[in-house]
Image 1 (tube, rainbow, N blue to C red):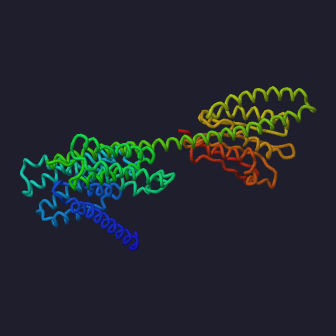
Image 2: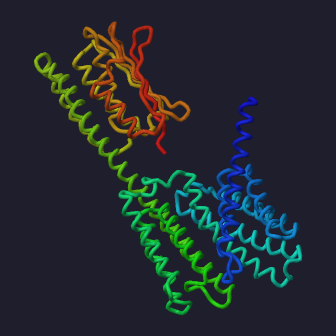
Image 3: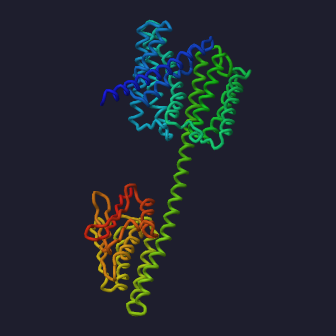
Length: 502
């Protein structure tokens, strides 16, 4: 690596760490200042944990300093002992990267493409590591002489819930932002005004639930869940991105109102208030995110079904295009025999009848063994042989492995017809078809003699050959295709490569 590239890499890492550090500082200590009140002794949502987890999932170990240093600096600035100010952030960093390892171990996709990713994030990325971080923080307080031993478990539980709530609310938003899914198209906003109205209704329901005059009685606690149907509505219609925004909005209003002494979660017991709002956050986030991810998955499935239906219709169109073309060529061969050799023409009609029966049978299946395709090709070449008599020589050969290889029906027939058309010059020519399996791929060679000046590049627009290319593209795996070339000794070669299906 050159010095310039190395300096660019180091510069990027420095900017990444500065960015993560700035976000954590603003999230953690800006929230602490905003929620400074007598109603909450601990913030029920600690967004710094969510930002740290998202940074670890997206950027790896290189941003560990950007997570650790602002936590240490903020703790020291808050007047905490050095022992606690070092141990607690170290535990958070370790727990965050444990969550990253657990998520990667289970195949987590940071793009949050499925409900499985939501479950992995919530369980292995949030619940387990944030629990470890919470109790480690409480233990660090005990080691620093800040609390008595009897407070380790209850305080550890509070930190666990605060870390987990911050992560499950903030991390999905950060991951979706990084994936570029917060756009009008990514949010599923067919009409942006409609989406804005939906989010405003979430905000209105949250305001009524948390900033209304109802206190913490039975009616007020039931009213706390007023935003739920609106969040579910957004999740179903807008998917994961919309539900993540709706959840963030509802949770932010719930925390702000509770810190101001308003809403159904306020009570004389501050710890009880925190536990109630934590339960609310856990329910609204997990249900909303899962519904949103499921809605996205349904939309992707419908889109795939639409694509599959389009591909199937295109294949049927191509089949319908090839079969009449094939029939026309066979009838042309028989027609040439009617006046010159009636018996041969009669035999040709019998052969054509058998040939059409076989082609109709194989057309009912999406894939057939190559051996059945080659039998149809042999019958077609026999008909052409009747037409050209001694002027056409042909051979069809394939080993056992190639004959068992499954291919789309009537795929090779246009190539053979093309070979006869160009291969019989002045009434004489030869067509050879060979098939082998090479390294798992089927290789079919259709070779024919050709007159001088024959250029395979000019065949691309013919009906038969265009259908071969299109059907290979539509029906065969990526990497399949057909190539035409002219050998130095005057042969035209069509080489078909078909990757195995499945």
